[in-house]
Image (cartoon, rainbow over all chains, first blue to last red; front, top):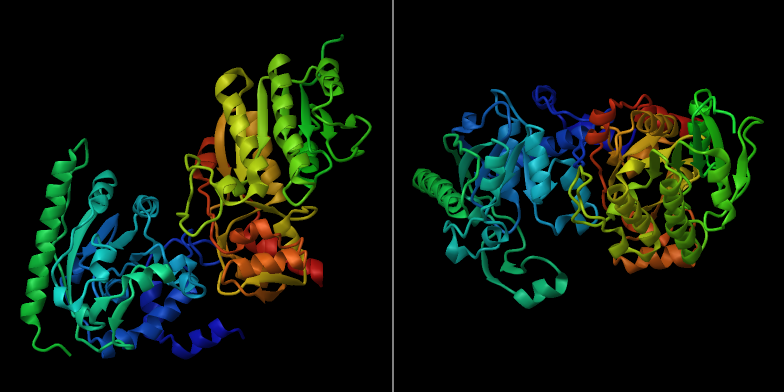
Length: 271
Length: 313
């Protein structure tokens, strides 16, 4: 018995196994898809993650059924917390929801594929290199894709700037319009408190070839996470000016801001 | 000259296993003339076979003698063979000669076999690379320049001489009985090197399926550039496991270490210039070919790896 089979037997509960089997995720004959997703590794990762999701971050979701059961979807959220914990929590929530679970794909920074072991592991768990071509091809394949239009600007922000949305890129809106994808906004509250950073050592980040080098705690705090999913938004395609695209992006950003405010008002305490 | 009974096809790279498969599929319908840059291969009494350098003047005599109707150019010297200069002469200048002669003698169909290597392997590759993607291999390694240049050349002729009806095929890893490329050698070996912490997604096509794809593209005659790959994927390390190989992990960081090891240990099976293909995925989108030619592979991945596993037992 190899390590993967052993871990699978030991950690994957029957309920989660059955739950994940309900998801219609097209894969090849050996359980892989073109982006490196592997059905077995994904099950294992989600199983190992269930305690993190349920017991460590005690995630509370609202409006999760706003993510359509089928068709191309972009789940657009606020990015925070130095590590892509927010993406994994959104992914877990949608993959394990009771009604019509889906296997959403998180777009990750270009830095990750170069990291031994971690890059492959993230790919096998369903994360995909954040490249517009990948996103477009996945939407063509009717996948649900998690995007954080703030990018590094969002995840690398300092604790003093928490819950202040940085500039959104317009790329996701172009993709939504081109591929007739539904946009589902999500406001994530709690991840800012998981790894609060007080400063970023830019020269060190440059030297190491990483996006940022934060001064922070060497562990992840167990903040309680609230995720509020907004109503699905549709945007007409066609020949649209960049000004109009920016206006639409601002519209999504404004909804996310409202969802963050909702989460902050729901929150009783940080941990 | 008496009227030909069958159309005549020139097939290059005749010493290779793939060319022989293609010849077997076409020999009943076409008069085949086989040539190879490397060696003369006996195929059968009814198939003339030549060892010839395309850059020599006598090559044109074949065009005069046989009045070819079509050319299937499979004779690309792979990067692990010969020196860089000889490869350039054979693959680029030789191919140019072949295409010039094809135009001069009014050939109506040319197939050029390329490789997915032309896209180049780097960390930022998206998956399902389609035919419009830039060819980055030459930027990443000098050893693949001839492969990229051969493609560029075929492209120029594709647009310059539309009557040649050139079809360029970019297949994923071709594997199976008789194949002697790098990946097939790795799957055949008992102990295969891997880069620690990296197991890129790969695509494999069985030699029989690839031969079918070539024949189909020749007969359907739709010019253009096409990736050829099944809609099935597997990680490199799992491919090795399924083929019954044990893994020999090489340190992967910093990148100079595995390159140094591959060079100093003279690992021909794991050539230094291909190391990035064992680190980063180069997953191509073969759907355009499948749709245009109505192609579907017949040999699944499990069957391919079973062959390599059984070969070892």
